[in-house]
Length: 343
Image (cartoon, rainbow, N blue to C red; front, side):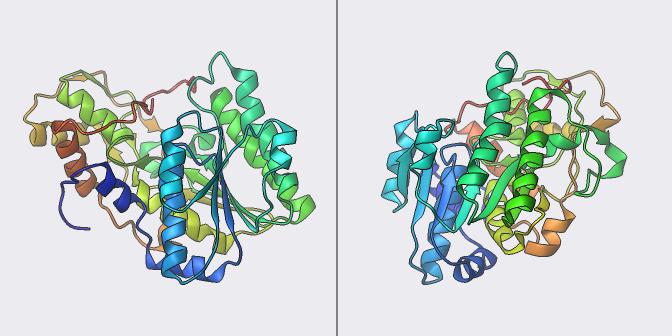
């Protein structure tokens, strides 16, 4: 990828959905249609479009089907325009879930994070009960399911991030329920012999959303930066999409677990200073860096699927340019700085 300015949302979404050769190869190998459950979230639309583009480039005729409540109709029309079928469904309703088409390949993206504090029962139902319903519905499919690096809890910054084999220490209802999701999926993978991959994401970034966008906006608005969560991992959403789709190749029972994360442990202080230079802003900080942070080690994914195509330097430069020009925002802060597990 060259250049550090993206003209508009259309160009951005084209970049985010551009498949790698590995994704094209994966789409040529797996058989049958793909259904994406919870498609209207932050990553779902571009992941669906990448699966469709890669299938077309591989010369494979398949349906890519996106399922969601579609409370915002713009996502549905955008997907339809791209040739992706859409189905409105409240998946927690067993009768509605039962009507979904059976497909050999499932990407499970449904989940609840923001607003989980105060709605703990719904959080657990969405993140833990629903995955069991989905696993039973799609017992004859291959499933790639999203989880989160939050299941690890904090780790020392000097350690370089939690590995897939490290013990989990989730903090708060959101992270605990996400580990519950993994445990439920593992149970059905083992008992029903369902091949699965579990994706522990930490953190996907594009120009409208992500840790770097949160920091860029604070720098641009000359807000003080809290340094307590002094480090983070980020990965370009297009690269996260690609790794997710390629993980169909590793789906197994018990589930294959993969951290999807960038290769660097980023200093929040240094990132904000770089934004300050690019934006011509004075940066102010509050507090000091804690010795630990929510960090994941993404080396396994890089070994299997290749190094991310978009570097942190490129992301920072593109985001700075986008924010200065007043580009669109999803209006969903990541709350990455949260240290008590309450979202």
